[in-house]
Amino acid sequence: MKTGQIITVVDIGSTKVSCCIAKITGDENFSILGVGYCACTGVKSGIIFNVNSVSESIVKAIEGAEKSAELNVKSVFVSVSGRYISSRILNARLDIGGRIIKQKDIVNLLFRGVPCHDTDEVIHSIPLVFEIDDLKCLVEPVGMVANTLKASLSIVTVPKTQLDNIVVSLSKCYLEVAGIIYGGYASGLYVLEGSQRSDNVIVIDFGGGVTSVNFFYKGTFCHSEVIPLGGQNITNDIAYGLNVSVANAERLKTLYGAAFVSWTDDKDIIMVPVIEEDSFISLKQMSKSELNRIIQPRVEEILKLVKDRIDNSPFKNEFSNEVIITGGGSLLTGIREFTAEFLKKNVKMKRMENIPYSFGIPIDNSFATLLGMIRSEIISDKFSISKSENEKQENKNSFWKKIMKLVENNL
Image 1 (cartoon, rainbow, N blue to C red):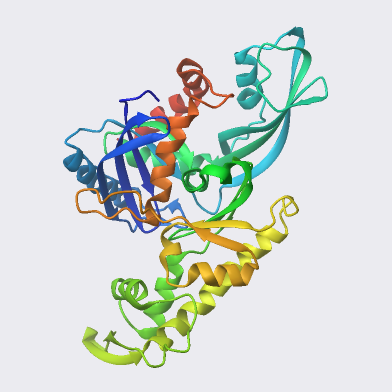
Image 2 (cartoon, helix red, strand yellow; image 1 turned 30 degrees about the vertical axis):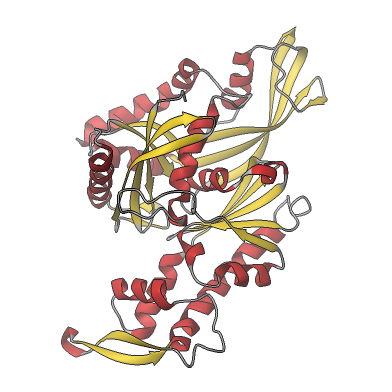
């Protein structure tokens, strides 16, 4: 991305669709021109199950961002997440034949050397380490002579049907897809800064429908685990447990909820709009402890699964204490302290304090994926393994041609 260029990113989440229009202002810096968001009911655990509903939410989110930015959007970068995201490490090999390694050899190794499947699509191929004739090489090997070039790659794949439904949803809004980014990867890119990029850090993204555990090895994304539980599950628990509407349950969670029951909760009284017979709503008094006794077990369940994924990860020994939490769920009162106690690790949370309110819309942790997507596109040209725009398009052509046929058949 060049300074002055404008980029639009869209995050299709399980609870809302959000959009951000930004202008690149310099080295990893950008200014927000417009933000928009809309509640979304057509996604569950990151998977689209109602294309029309999602398209309507996308339109409203885009229109909100366009209005504040005074721009018209034609193409967007979109995030993808969900329980069926797969992350793994693969070893790729390319015969060079004793000549000088060229940039196109790196491209071939990263993408064309990765085995493809009929049901999945590779959206990220990130090198962790290169090898030249069995000798490790931590820097880009372009210009060096070799017989064979190898690399350990962090691969992220998504079911093709999931990508198809995302593209169809956007096409119904007359939007082109400029690129697709894994949400967990994007969130981590945004929250990691300074010295953290030289450390081994786990970034936990507490989303609405899923919670992702993302491993960054010295600032490089290397693995992700997805747990199909998130903030929406907590909201549903409150709605069922207190017999309130989902909307009121979300409000109660936001205003009064906490990750655990404290000793003062019995003394704090809140008013709860309980649904009576014939849909009649009456206000009832209850203590915050009743609310938080519903929230705490679900938080414990999510954190237990997070701990299991970390403990069973092949990277367990390399990732010891450094954990950062983000996502909308990280705004729950006490979640940082509870996570630190549960995982027995040093847990930090990066708040979006340096991001100004954009036309009345507060930018909080629930926008981490959006901001990370912008940063991803800014720094992509600076990665040693970056491809030129022509090479990028060449790699996408076969997939997008199939997608466009699919779109044409659905419009």
